[in-house]
Image 1 (cartoon, helix red, strand yellow):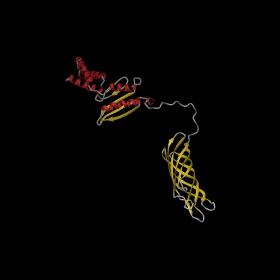
Image 2 (cartoon, one colour):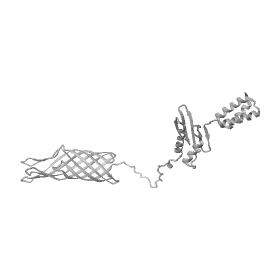
Image 3 (cartoon, rainbow, N blue to C red):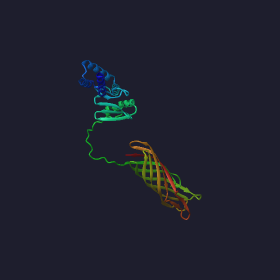
Image 4 (cartoon, rainbow, N blue to C red):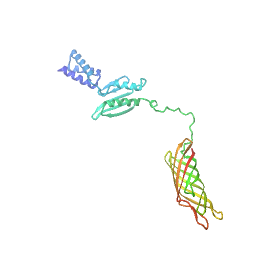
Length: 331
């Protein structure tokens, strides 16, 4: 009865601590309590050592890596081999601790590298073991050595600029050539000078345009020949880097001469109204750009021309429009 009780006490102590030296200490104390003979002590000590070797203990420690992993998950030796395969032999593992333990809802993983710590939880212990390799490698590899990391830039030897950087607009100037319809009696060639300032996605633009002469005559060969100059002011919005929407107002001064009249006569009149435009600039470089643009105008103010003692020979269309190919610079 005494030997059996002694062995049970030893097994319980070895399974709890997993350290042989503490088992021997407990064995010495128990032999005093129960009065075993030296031969009984030797038998009990041998059984305790064999029990501690056969018991499934979750902890394992190596000189370089500290682990506590249940047998169903993996082993500390396997974990160290995986870490060495990814990191090489030059990365020290002495500050690394990997612990996996079972809970009611599954398993929990803790990886410590120095003072840094990561915790994970999963129902599968082998999955946590594989995750331990990934997490430990990520924590051990320096940021500068990770794939895709930018190399550290040397400190500049030039003195820092004392003036604070101030955000400013993007400026642009462009020339455009195209076609205008509805402002003059016939579709005519048009030239455009455009300047703009852009803050992020919004900005302002000012335009100056020239419309080449166009004419119209009726059945009696009476009519008018006209040309025009104009200007506009627009608000800009860029929903995308290559696209631009414009909303604004524009006005044209039409001037010309009557045709078929016994006496030569000239005149001028204004037309204008709100505008809506859309531009696309697929050609982009740090300095130059190019693209296409279209703009429609509702002529609230419509110019009219008539020959005295005859009749009206021309009136601007309620809606006019133009299309341009633009090329410019921006800075």
